[in-house]
Image 1: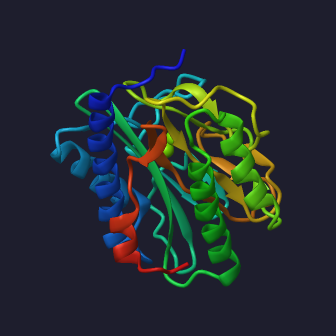
Image 2 (image 1 turned 180 degrees about the horizontal axis):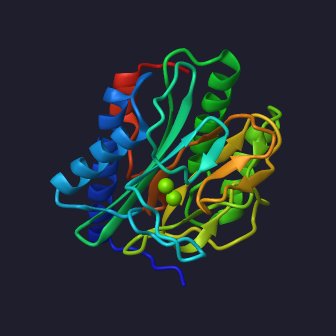
Length: 264
Ligand code: MG
Ligand code: MG
């Protein structure tokens, strides 16, 4: 069942998502070669809890019942999603998708940004740029009266036309009091198909795009998902609401991009 949100609920969702945005901006300030993803995780957890919120990912169970051990997912290079923070220092040329969720006053925020560590190859920067563009193309398709398939169609067309792979096993989702609600929001689809987009709909749109083949595999930790061909992946995510017929982006990359500059 899709839970449509009231205007008041959308403002609570905005507060949670702006806290997630601020957390990702804290990470943007410190991410560089030599830093470990575990250090980023500690910083994120302290920041979220310091603002009276709960890091939603911590303890979140996978389908095997294994709780996620950290407050952010850090997926490096060929890791697509759900990478577990560890003690390996980040190296010049790495890219890291940092996915962050926080629950504030009972409502959830969810957003992801793929960061460059030092000097990243032009080929990979282009993947990042295209994935971020695809996210905004998907967001542009969020109009009351249209359908969820329109979003996936926009994302898929933009990425596949440039020769990139679209991961299909993981999808965006409704979001509200629960981090994952109906409907599913795939990064592929057909125009005019799927549930109708209505006022009060809150969804997370999150293209997961690969440089090579979109085939993925699960690591033995039963969380980390990697590309099968070992090539890089990118992941950008915004939580959005439909408000007066139009899309309203509740999360934000503004502060991250002020720090990062227009790198790509
Ligand atoms: Mg996320
Ligand atoms: Mg999500």
